[in-house]
Image (cartoon, rainbow, N blue to C red; front, side, top):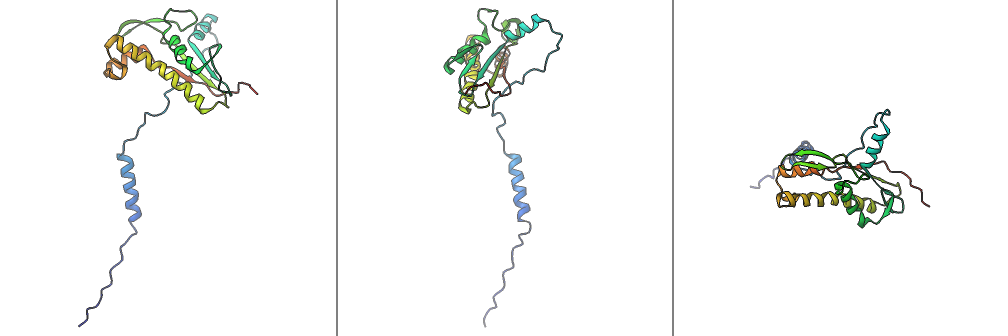
Amino acid sequence: MARKKRAVPGINSSSTADIAFMLLIFFLITTSMDTDRGLARRLPPPPENKDQKQDDIIVKERNVLQVRLNKDDQLMCGQDYIDIKQLKEKAKEFIVNPYDDEKLPEKHRKNIPLLGDCMITEKHVISVQNDVGTSYKAYIDVQNELVAAYNELRDELGKAKFGKTYAQCDEDEQKAIREYYPQKISEAEPKKYGGK
């Protein structure tokens, strides 16, 4: 007697898309994403009151280091054209103002936990502005040099005060170092700086 072959029932695939969608949502929610990537930047402050005294404007100007890149990737720091290799040292000198120079940021006394009373240039700002034709590589090189200036200063302070680099310091020590050297790099809107 021959057996009858049974027909295999078909698989209901109407909910397959729903299951795939739910799995996708599950993995998106449970996966940790690096949100600390990118360039940390401070926006320029809002326009000040127009009734300011002329003295206040001069004091404000000394606290700002203008860094400009033209369309030919030439770098201007303050009033001087410089090479990219000089930018880090110029920025460090500006941030620290070691000799309390009147042309560099004003220093004031601040009590910082773990560091005590310090004379710091907390109001300094490095303003970066580039031409619309600036190459991406030159722009990133400038950003890297400025961040490297802050990193070196923070490492030097960490070694001097705590005997270790900034990265090796604990959370409270790092907070104190950041208060001493707050990173203040401001991006200005790209402009056209002439050229050919």
